[in-house]
Image 1: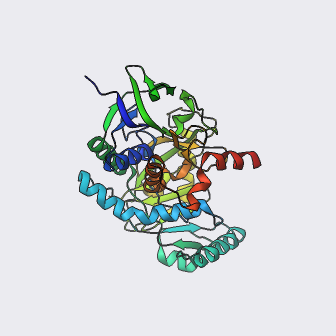
Image 2: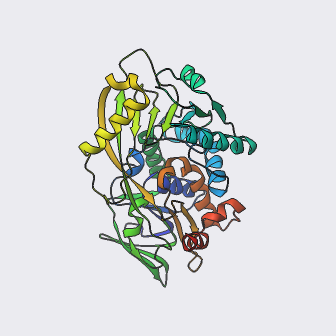
Image 3: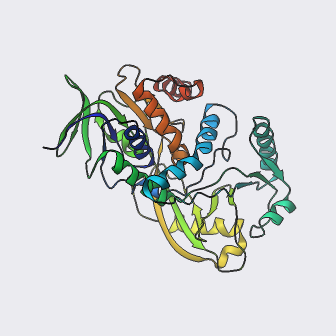
Length: 376
């Protein structure tokens, strides 16, 4: 007879849900991982894979701390996944150049580099000539902020590795869309089309689809999809891009296989439309040519879409519901799901175990998220 009672049910099999399920399973808990599609094959596998802990952070604070913490975990995270699954997620410590397109942006980036350096991170301002010497493939710039510790991974391989690791440590059910969840006399109850499951805890980690799952308690904040379209290209000439280049409206992420991922659009009204549009492809190709003219002759490999899970203030919601502590949220990671997967796995595991969180984690609790949304 199929087991229907668990210590923890994790809803969602992307990198966040799979990371949580894997960590909980490692602690010896009986875990059920429910995924409406195929584990590891949703939005997570569509990402560019940047580990941009410093890249987009324009001020210090809990989000910056969380990103740095998770990035610092990634090498051991990758090694552990390889040991468990035999899958190399192709982590690359290649660094990132945050390019300035005018003097005003250059000044903003210089200031960002100052406070990041003062916080103990590595950040160096490069003049236009220094930027071009470092990356000759790039066109003219107004300089760049060099972030040598922001690397990247192959998102499809990370998704696959976490899927395998989660299957090893948990009961994983695919094609199991959750119809509803709630509380009954036995604790948490989760209803799918084919079964009813019970557990002591439910971790909601269904990405952009989290807001569409009916249950009590409801999500404290809205979570919805932001569609992104991306391209993969392969340089033909002798020049190669060695570091991620991030400019206004475009990023170029070089991968170990020689390809470059270019992305990504931000479409907040597209909902879950999976189509690749000519307009998006054209805008990305035009931006690639503007940033790196030498790539105009690159071979076009493919284009695809993904759906970032966004809250109104673009910050993740992580932690136990204050009124129903058996419900734990791990949603709304927006553009940083890949980066934050290791630390989110630890945060959710600590919440289930009732362990005390460090102060900077507490900024992402439901009460803090509701307060931030009210202010905004």
